[in-house]
Image 1 (cartoon, rainbow, N blue to C red):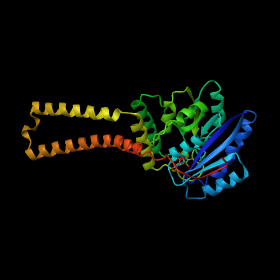
Image 2 (cartoon, rainbow, N blue to C red):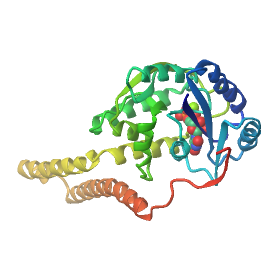
Image 3 (cartoon, protein in one colour):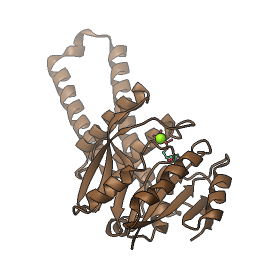
Image 4 (cartoon, rainbow, N blue to C red):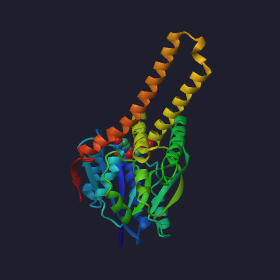
Length: 304
Ligand code: UDP
Ligand code: MG
């Protein structure tokens, strides 16, 4: 029988793990006679009881596998490790807080049988998330889509089901700043959505504070688009034109010299800093690639 690995990144999820495990294990009944299930939990340097809870389950069930990181490497690194360790015919990625309904993995599997190598969960509504989170996510996915040349589905996180072919192609991509929800479509395999309303997390707090959200958003933009560089060119052309117009119209003739100097200095400084900042984002990424450090470090793996 074919196999499916369910990959679950975990960071300080002690409040969710028992319930999540229950729902995930119930999937075996749903898949009975169709796919054999294995579970790969990546403990991303949790400092609560996540590690102990997971190890208890792994002791009783050899199909529950654990990768313990040496520290917190981040959600994207955790998923990467799960996919690196996955050897099944299919792999599915799901959050540990039950915001991605596990039962949907079965629908994804059925959809894949229609000839799709990637089936992703597309969010219709998000329940009980802050207006800021909803609006920023809505805006971000659309800005990113407009900036990239590849088809990145909007309102889609990392909750997805992929075939071994996609996984093997994906695993060859070893970039350090990872934005998996765009890297998977980049592989170019046939994909389709499965729609769902996103429930609220069952317990605990989000592990994505604003700083992590921004980092992920920047990785999405700067790893997948050169549009920010085009923007610098556009801006410099615009300023050049503005300077000529101002000169021609003699706008500054009536103004005091100090104001003009002050205005010109502030404007050029801010534009220069913006341009340097944008270039810096790319250079920092080149620097990280050149160092070629591992994406994550495994402290201990269980049941592999
Ligand atoms: N996560 C992780 N490492 C991190 C942050 C999050 O492995 O540094 C996991 C987390 O345990 C969860 C998933 O990534 O399984 C998504 O995180 P969360 O639910 O907090 O994000 P949100 O749904 O609020 O965007
Ligand atoms: Mg969540």
